[in-house]
Length: 353
Ligand SMILES: [Ca+2]
Ligand SMILES: [Ca+2]
Ligand SMILES: [Ca+2]
Ligand SMILES: [Ca+2]
Image (cartoon, rainbow, N blue to C red; front, side, top):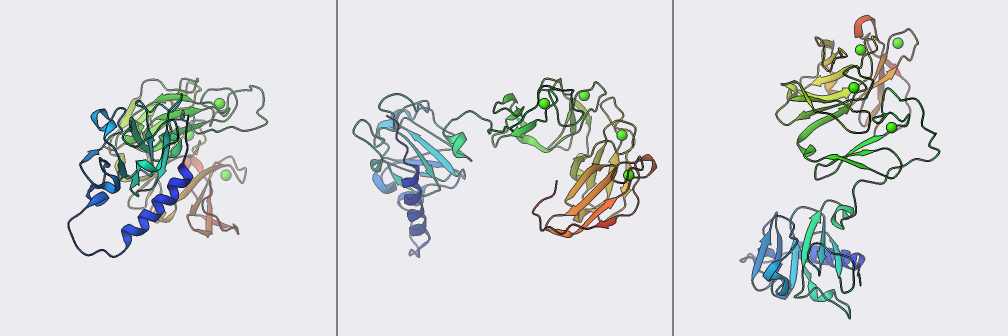
């Protein structure tokens, strides 16, 4: 039997959280207070009393502590924790008790049992995550789909990684897995380890083979190009160069120079705006400063195509939270920009894409 008591536990956690913030005379830590930040703590007594064991990683098998655990507290920093009477996070089958807890209050396991099974002195495994979905172990990724999907059509130059004519998404989970979402409630795992990337932007075709590619910056400031294989995944990455940590924003913006090859916009930490013209071979030509300063305040940069139909692609810039100042920068020869022109944008918006 599977028991889901999340709603009840939310209220328990809230009540305990309230108690923890009340004024308590200075004294040595006791009970749940002994659990250090960053840990998941299990106690062999109720209310955080008795012996304590602490964990920094999810436990598929609590071993000797399985038969000792009587109370727990989640101080991992993750908002959700799942407790299983069985090992290996087993939620199915008879006599399985699964409890999802939200928040950081301490819990007595004796509160959660039914006639068939219990958690008290029977805690088989425990894990935690940022989202309930990940905690409960449902398959990533998020469910993204759209209706009225047309039949397969010609590949799109932008936003179509598997060349079926339909737009698709990339999704990075909290644990750093990158997923390809083709838009039909399914997903394909591209791989792990993407948490170390500090910027990701899709770019259209960078290497001239007709498939959309991906740019990613790592924590060391190296910029990598991941060539799309046209099937929703990527071939072996290629280093574009280092020193990209001086950029506070990387933004694919389509073809700004008008040569049919996708270009990249980058705003440096000093507020200058740079345009990196794609060379169609997986790298960029010499960058060009197209904004001498003051671009730090613009949080939104969008390659919106050619709004005035003069044959030069144009750029829209806006400041988050201040949509009274939205500007269009008309493209000039060679990817340069004319001075910005204010456009009317009356809506109060949280974000503009
Ligand atoms: Ca597609
Ligand atoms: Ca490509
Ligand atoms: Ca170009
Ligand atoms: Ca134009």
